[in-house]
Length: 187
Image (cartoon, rainbow, N blue to C red; front, side, top):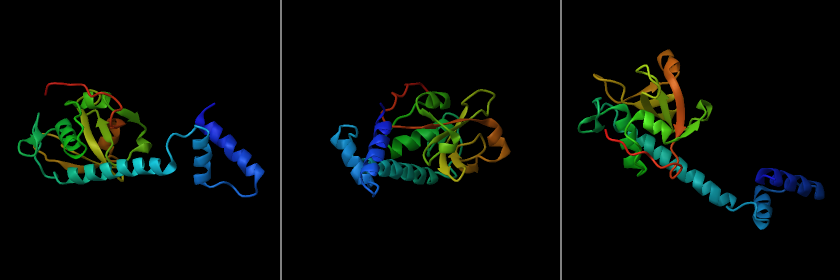
């Protein structure tokens, strides 16, 4: 029996036994007492808040690089960025995670999510060179992402709802610390 099914049964049986529905804290206590919940709601909320804070820091840091020129193979503000070098630098500077160097490898090393579940800090991938996962950016919210687009351009924010990006969208990924070991790669 899954934990959630057990929780539902507990809620139903508790609700039937008394006229008032149990609070979330009461449910958490029952589940914890029976060994079905290993973390309290407060602990889970702390984890959620920590993830949210890291995403906010990541997006804020990335916005500080608006206007940095694109440079193929670039991975610093001094030399310029290409798309995957930009994403890698932002994650390393802000979160302390070293992602693989290439966009396709970044996609392989992160967890697939549905486009409807995008949150700030998630990675968005596009087919811009007639091959899957040839371009990557960081989702900033409200259907927009920040990226280093191409030669002659600079780091900027764009709307994923524009037809150019909609036609080329390859998928979204979430970077979860410790979820998978990043693959090492040469630039």
